[in-house]
Length: 358
Image (cartoon, rainbow, N blue to C red; front, side, top):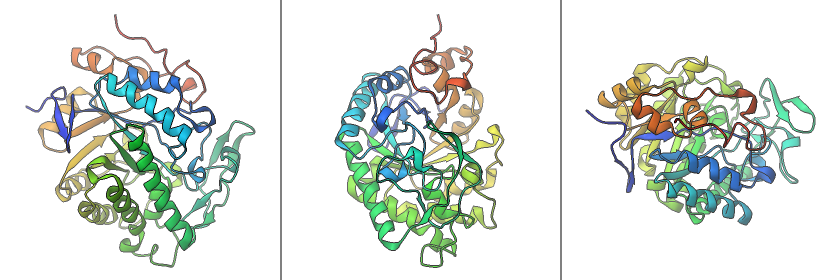
């Protein structure tokens, strides 16, 4: 039986186990720069095989939430270097998740020169938290021009190179949860009439271009991509042909050399489930590593590995709340309860002060 706790390979990287820390926004990056506090937080959780960081913007335009990090400036590179050293000290590998928030943003959260952009001028429903004025409606974004498309691809490439220069082992492209890359996939948020909108082939084009460019720049073995078929985050609407869209996307991503796909199913948190048949089809279409995420415990994670449904299993909230997650999982001990009130607040409380078991 394939063990969650046995070493395994991720491309050319050896992971100390098959456990992945899922990417989770924590809003501790004051000035959008990774801090020593963040290095401590990730170091505490580095007994997993792979740490995937919180969403990290490739540019000023992608910093849609308060206090999220970037990966494009010298200061940010220096901050991520400390995180990489800390994570490697615990034995884990580190992938920085590159998340451009697109229309899921507010101007008050962007630094000078930042702009809310998206595939089309279609606002997301709901509101965005700002530190200055509390919850504010999402604004109507500016529709991206052809020049914007090329610029954003270049920003992802620069961020990928910056991550590698900082000592990270790779990057994960965030094409899930309603952010910019998924905004191109969904016809509700992508109402373009050029070669990037309309048909499935057109809607997947920009995501494939970003993935291909980043893989060419830093090597496909150092790139993963996160997908959330049937996800509802960021006001993503259901649409006809969603399964066909993701199967076409994964098939087109194969030749780019990207190392892994990371499929998240948020049904345990109230989102529509990802059909088992779609997960199986994506698995069959993908030639390399597959990560599954969403509501797993030890038994269901081991069952998924044994059935060949995935190579690695990602855990979110249990790792967030439990620094010694791996040890407790192996021993069958209960995890800490998550304090939602401190999930996105600045400072150490609810971040680096969760207890370890006796």
